[in-house]
Image (cartoon, rainbow, N blue to C red; front, side, top):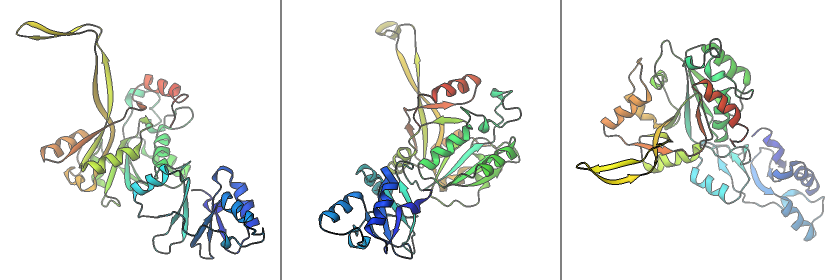
Length: 349
C-alpha cells in the first residue's frame, strides 16, 4: 500500500498524537504501534481511545497504555489464502504485513484497494499483430489500444495488482519496443515486470519455455486483449481445491434458435422444443497451470494453449474448466472495441 507508514505510530507517542492520526485517516482509521525497529506492538482504533478516556486515561498518556496487544497480521511470503479470506469476510479492513525474518511492518493491506494476495506468477501474451483492428494497430500494438483513454493492457495490470499479484512476465513480438517503453514509463507500483522477446511467433503459450526459472508453483497465462472483471482469487482457489494440473477459463456463449427443434426416434417425433436457447462454453483466454506442466511445452516452437490442453489430457493429467459469468470482452474486432468503450460506463471492475 502506498504511504503505509501513515498507519504507523511510534510507541513514544501520546493518545493525543494517535487521535490526530486517526482523524486524518478517516474511513481507514486504524493505526499500528511500533518500536524504533518498526516491530509490531499492537493496534489502536477510535473505539480504543474512547474506552480509554472513559476509564480516566489522559490525552498525554502514552499509546502503549491502551493498545490492543494482539492484532491480526500476515507474514510476507507466507500468506495462507483461506485465512486471509476469512479475515476479509470477518470485516477486517486493514491488516499489517510483517517481514518474514525481522517481524517488522513492511506494508499494510487495505481491502478497499487490494482484494487479496495470490501466490502466482503471470504471463501476459502480448505478441500478436492485431490485424483485425487495422488501421488502429498499424503503428500501435493491440495491448496499447485505448479504451476510454486507458490502454487495454493497463486494465489487466490493474486487475492483477487488485489481487496482490506482484510478478509478471510480458511476452512481446510485434512492435515490442512500444510495449516495453509503455510499461517502463508507467512505473506501476507493487508489481515487477520482465519481458519475453519472441524472435518469431510462438503461439499463445509457446514463449513460456523462454523462462528458465519460475518463483511460484502456479502460473496464470492470459491474453493481453481481454477486458474482464474476472475474480482471479475464486479462479485460483477453485484450481487449487480441485487438484487440477491446468484450469481453463470458460465463457458461456448463448445461441438463440428462432425455430422449433425436434427430437426424433426412428423417424417419429419424440419431443419438440420451441425456439430454444442453447448454451455452449468457449475458451476464455485465461489459464492456470502448475509450474511443472511447462515441461509439456516444446522448446523454441509455435505452441498454443489448446495444444497444451490436448497434450495434458492425452497424458492423463487433470484439466479443469472454471466458468466466469461476469463481464468478458475479447477486443479482437472494431465492434468489440466500440462495445468496450460503452460497457466501461456500466461495468464495475
